[in-house]
Image (tube, rainbow, N blue to C red; front, side):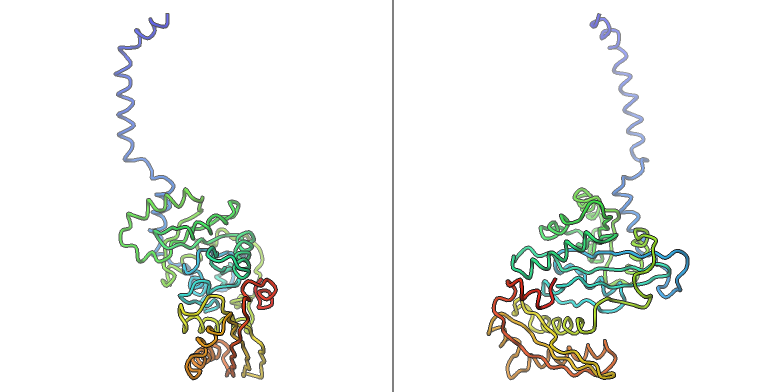
Length: 352
């Protein structure tokens, strides 16, 4: 009986199969692009779009939320934060591990307040107490926000990026921000890269941009806004950061230290503010640069004290711009051997 059924269907089987294949092939070119292609197309087409000016008075329902900016060291997180806030609140340098604290910057656009959280680059090279502290800061930030902006260099992904990506919780929406997109010359290479990235993590959106492009920065506000909850603002409309002038003084001195010593100085150097007094428009600041070895101390002081003098001069000028008044700044250099691997000292020097 089964043989009879097969023989009866044999003549019709071949012609029936061919018509089914032809329509399928004919429809392929007009099928809509998949989700990744659509994401790429939308991202690229919206690059020229701008959002309303940031100084428009608040209207309608207020929105407010925390947005963590995460990524490997030296990927451009602090530059991005400063551009989003519209003022320098996070120091930058070519040296890895420049950002060591959770720094919050605010920007209020119309009825929405964006609270951006800059985090240290996740550290994998050294397992000392300082790096353990920095990594705890990163982990704490990504688990306590409404949105995550994962910053990578466009078209690139390595082990350091993967370490950070592994920290992202599935429950929190994440945006894949491809920084330095202006350096990509062959846009056809981005689609395969984007597909690989989406396989690694279910990103809500793909944002190609340059942190130095004002229109890209303004466009990012509109992208982030829809992920923030409807709730009252956390800060005043004109506030830019939750960090004190004392904290900023230490950070600015550390930035000048890193920029003027380059790769010669180990990353474990830090700055402590011993005194910060305000007398009208005058600030009296006393600071200490902490290093781990005598050789590092000599490197900072320089011949006849010229290097330390230049660090102090550049820091003072920037502090005067920040405070709008005169600054009297004194800086010393002290050796504290092994401080970066001493949990107690790491906390004493202001690390979480």
